[in-house]
Image 1 (cartoon, rainbow, N blue to C red):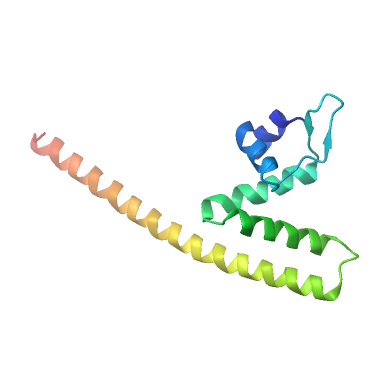
Image 2: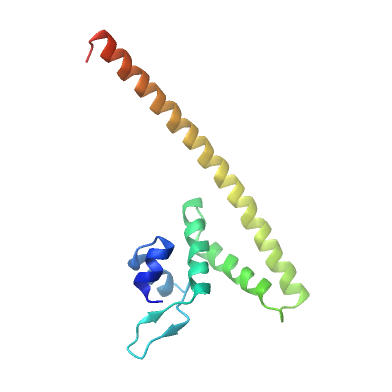
Amino acid sequence: MQIGQVATRAQLSIRTVRHYDDVGLVTPSVRSAGGFRLYTEADVDRLLVVRRMKPLGFTLAEMKNLLAALDTLDDTKSSVSERKTAVQCLRECRAKTGESAERLRQQLAYAEELAGLLAERAEVSVRTGRR
């Protein structure tokens, strides 16, 4: 797939996909004879992992570490020690994801409270003729 198709599928901008390539996060599997980036389904899957991590506050280094851990677990030639290290990385990322999700739930609750308050105030204002 070309970068535009990948960006659309991953719901990212082309610029973002290029940036992730430039920083070594998700590199295209192949380049065409003309130098165009060509991506596989596995590359798209990697981009989706990154897309999910970004709003949760993961750093680029943490993203690279998680992708490397996933690669290690997918590699049947990985040693037991490498696999244990990879699993530990997954556990740490899962814990951070849980903490981030809890913060987001709290922010959503605050947003919903505010939306309710504003709707209520607007309704009262309409009923009483106050502006």
